[in-house]
Length: 637
Image 1 (tube, rainbow, N blue to C red):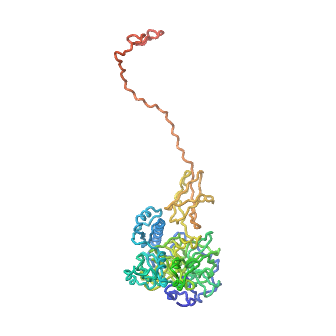
Image 2 (image 1 turned 30 degrees about the vertical axis):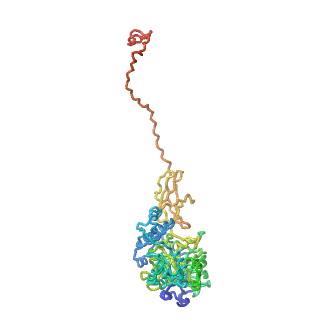
Image 3 (image 1 turned 120 degrees about the horizontal axis):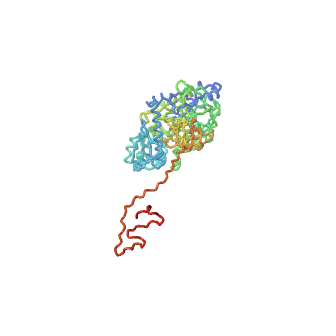
C-alpha cells in the first residue's frame, strides 16, 4: 500500500491502493488546496442554505442513481422502501414477543422466516399486530436452529485458532442464510470435512473446520479484515475539513456529515463516522465547500467539535494481530462487536441544520436540492439502499447481509463494527472519501458509510467490492450516543372536519396523519397555549373533544416527535348548544276497559235450604211506592 501522504483524492489511485480500505478522507493534493482566505465566508454558507423541500420525500436529484443502479422508477423505489420499513416493524414485534425471526425483501415482496416451533405463534402475532403488515408478506418456516451473527462470533472466538480470526471479513445474515466471509475460504475443503466433523478438535479449528461442524452457517470467500486510512478518511455528503494541528495544511482531511441531529437539550448536532475523528486526535476546521462530488473548493464556515467518537470497542479499543494470536479463550469471549459512530457538538449558531441531506445534483450547488429524511428505520437483507458521499455523490445498491465486519484502525489495530454489507461493484457505490455519509432506504435513515472491502469476484453476483455501513439501529439500541436523536421531517396533520362545522360540546374533532413515526403526538394549540396532547391511533387517525363553551372554537395542530415537529395547520368549528327536543304533551290516562263478564245464572238453592221471603214483601216481589208520591207518578213494580 502506498504511503498515505502520497495518496491523492483520485478514485483510481485510491481504489488500487489496497483490497480493503475504510472509507473516509484521503489527503487533498497540494494543487487543490487553497488558502483559508480563498474559502467562502461563514455568512455566505449559512445565509444561502435553502430550506428543505416542502414535500416529505423529494427524490428529484436521485432519479438518475435509482434508475441507473436499481433499474426502478423513483415511485417504485419509495414504495419498496415503505415495504422494507413495514416488514422490519413486523419482525421486531415478533422478536419482542419471543419469536426469533429474520426478514428480507425483494422487488417489493417481503419475507419473514421463523423456526418450526414458532410458526403458529408467529401467524397469530402477525394477524393481531397493530402494525399493518405488508400486503405481499410470505412467512417461511425453517427446521434449523436460528443463530445470530453475534452468537456465531462468540462461538468462533471459543473454537477457532487465533490466527484464523484475521481471515474473517464479516459474519452476516443473508437471504441465503447465515454466512461467514473469510479470506481464502475453500468450500470444497469444508464440504470434504463434513463426514469427519465429529472427530475434529473443539479448539484451534480452521474456518473451514468450523463451518463443516456448524450446519447453520456457510462459508464464503472474503477479503480478510479491511484496512483503514482512518487518519485521512474525512469526506462525505457535505464535507467538513480537519487537521490534527488545528490549521489548514496540505495534510488536512475531509469527512462527511451523515445526518443532522439533536442533543438531549434540543441543540443542534451532527452524526458521522467514528473513525473520522482519528480516535479523537483531530480538530474540525469547518465545512468543506464543494461545487460537485470529489471537487474541493475550500474550507467554509466553522462547524463544531467532536463530542463523542467510537470506532471499534469502548474508548476506540481494538486489538493487534499479535494480541489476537495470544488471546485466551476468556479474552476472546469479551470481544463484543463495536461500532463506527461520532457526534459533532458545539455547532456554529450561524448555521441552520435541516432534517435533510444533499442530493448532490448534477451541475448545481450541493445545497440546491435535498431529500427530506422522514425517520429512522432498519435495513433488511434485500433492501435497496442509497448512500451519499462527497466522492461518489449518490449511489444505490442491494444490502445482502447484516452482522459484524472487521476493519483496521489506528496503530494497526483491528476494530469490529456491527452493520450492513452491500454490493459495491468497482467501488462505484462507496469509495475513499465517502466516510460518514448518510445511508437511506426510501427516505428513512438506516446507516452511516463506514468501510469498503475489495477483491475481484469474491462476493456473490460477481461484485468486485463490498460497501459496509454502520447500523443506526444498533447505535441507538446499544445507546452509544444516548440522548441524541436524528432530525427528520414530520408530515403535517390533516383536519378532517371542515372549518365552520357546527358541533355540540364534547363532539369529536377528527384528523389523520400520513406515515407517522412511532412516538409522534398531536399538540392542539389554542390562543398560543397547549390545549391538549393527543395520541395517534395505529392507523394514523386522531380526535379530541370540542369544548363545553358555545361559540367559535379556533385551534392549531402540530405533529411532534421529540424535538422534531411538523408545519402548523389551523382550523375552527362552531360549538352550539345541544338541540332541545320539543316536549310531547302527556295524554290523559284512560282506564283500561274492563271486559264484560258473562251474566251468570243465580244459584238455585236446594229445596231443603230455601230462605223465607221477607215479611214486608208481597208475593209478586213488588215494592210499595213512597207515601208522598201521587198515584200518577207511581212506578210499576
